[in-house]
Amino acid sequence: MASTILYMSMSLDGFIAGPNDRPDNGLGDGGGRLHEWVFPDAEGGDFAAAEARLTGVNRQVYDEFMSTGAVVAGRGTFEPAEGWGGDHHDGVPIFILSRHAAPAWAADWPQVRYTSDLRAAMSDAKRAAGEKNVLVHGAGIAQRALAEGILDEIEIHLVPVLMGAGRPLFEHLGTEPRELERVRVLEGERGVVHLRYRVRR
Image (spheres, rainbow, N blue to C red):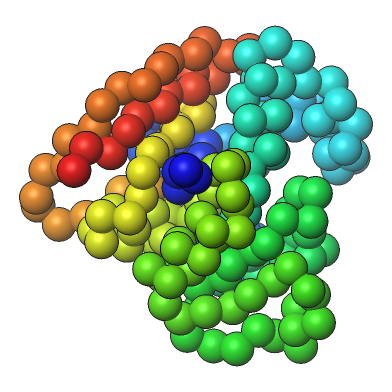
């Protein structure tokens, strides 16, 4: 059965974007540093060529999350990324959590579905993914899914940098501890460490 897995690049001090993140500055000031492990030497914005240069552990991890069968993300992740052109990878269904209808520029993309119900989005994504897993994107989605007990695993790509400020990944979880079970630790290239945990219920 499919698992819902949050994949997130994060600084050592817990930030997933730099300061001043907004729709036209989606990763915030300096936030691109958190994704250099997956886009090595992407001078001039040639991200496809950078991905092609991935090797070793980082290539393994990249291939894993790009082989998932569905995506669940928040509007704040989806829209600044221009909806990934309507196709995150290989035409898999994309479920976007939002209180608003899809914007006109995304309304006709067949794989994109806007919904206001997180639990339904996760359930529908699991069903759509079949035997594959569901890639979960975004801090807000992660926090809500953890609170509702519908996030199965967390994979943190821990980047060796201290951002000092920005958007934290785990900001609104309350004070109740949530136990995690370590699944694996992989040392990637460029200093990144990939940490996977199962959420214990």
